Length: 127
Image (cartoon, rainbow, N blue to C red):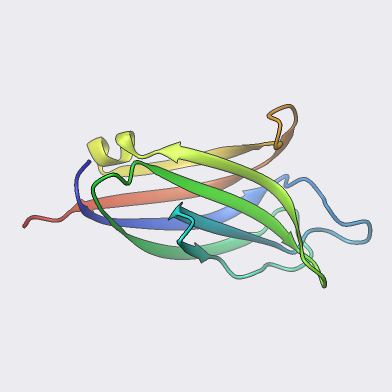
């Protein structure tokens, strides 16, 4: 895997599974390659179709081949998992870019829990 910089834009979510009894989700996304270093979007209150329009930047090192997206509903006490997904970065490394809606399967992979729109751009480090 090449070394470089990966810019990840978390644009929006659509049809996110509602985890609240009253109102809608207070959704945010955690993004990481390794659980040791996570970044996250801000929380968008009361929306199952949130618009984040946030860009996160990751330094890519040898061995970084998968990126993880965990979508949560922020609650007064704790959080509920809306959905999680992982993307292999091979296509992003080869083409330099990625622009897709990513489906969020349930934790057991049975039901659709919405999707998030993600754009990624990879720049190789020339050392």
